[in-house]
Amino acid sequence: MRVRFLSPASYELDEAIRYYNHEMTGLGVRFFQEVEKAIVRIQLYPEGWTKVGTQTRRCLLKGFPYALLYTVEDDEILVQAVAHLHRDPQHYKGRIQ
Image (tube, one colour):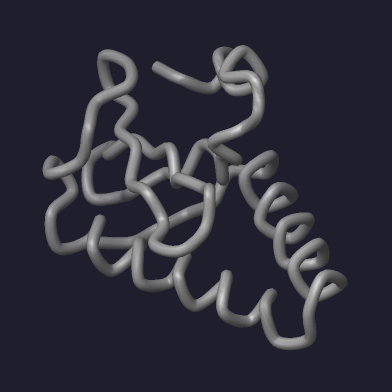
């Protein structure tokens, strides 16, 4: 199943990678690898993650306080947000369906 990051999610991913690389060399790469692993899990079990809206689901990343918020539409997974779990959830409310 194809995966597509919506523009805000892509920006959040880039910002998180930059932040972690600034904190420690190579940590941004580890973060991105965890995002890739989460995407594989979502592709294998698209309906297997917790619903946070009527259509939006949340897949937690391992080792980082982040989750991928996504929807499944036809044969495509749309990542709505790369959500920091300590951020006010209202920030993502407009993207949750």
